[in-house]
Amino acid sequence: MTLSFMLIQETISTFQAQGEQFEQCLHFPNAQHEVSAELAEIAGIRGISQDELKQEIVQFKQKLDRLLKLVDKISETANKAELAVLLLYFVKSVFLLKEILEADWDLFLGNDKREVIKNVTSGSVVIYKEIKNAVSPETPKKDGNYVALETLKHGLKSLIEAGLRVNAFSQEEVNAFDLGDITPQESETVLIFLSTMKKWEPVYKRLAAS
Image (cartoon, rainbow, N blue to C red; front, side):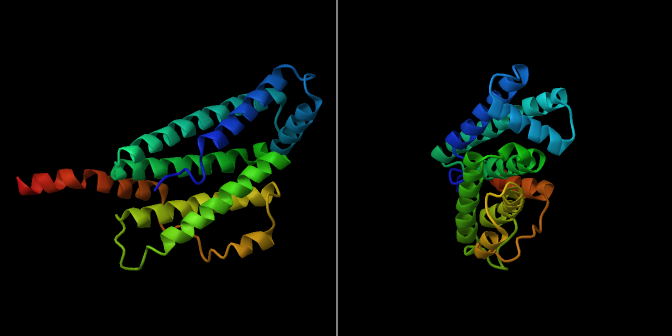
């Protein structure tokens, strides 16, 4: 299980470059008229000043940096087959993506960025359905597939809400995903706890046997 289907490095780098472009344009407002107009629209949506927007874009870039580091860690642990650690990074990555989408959805305006949101959502839907087929009512909560499924419910809800807001897809297209009920049954705190149980399970077994 990896996040390569939705959080490839190139995707994050695209938005990092966008954040840098926004920040530069805020410092030199006459540099690019089209970007300046986009920034004015975003500031209007948020009801904030250009200075306040500048700070929020800096925070946006910082969150993307953290997300990229998590994706790098996912790649490293996947190569080492450290599945228990991988699950924890997976949960943290999806919830950080959820935070970015909910706080900064208006930074994803524009046809190119809408297309990225659409592709990420479509890829997430495919993986969600694959994992859903591997989970049954008897699947224990500490099982990696259960944790991944519940985590993806959070991520998909945020992706769909952001996609609808920026017109990346229509409600009819969302209905066509045929996801059923994706209301999460577990909170972020519980999912992080469940993901760490698998990591520490070998330790507990050794202690019990000693």
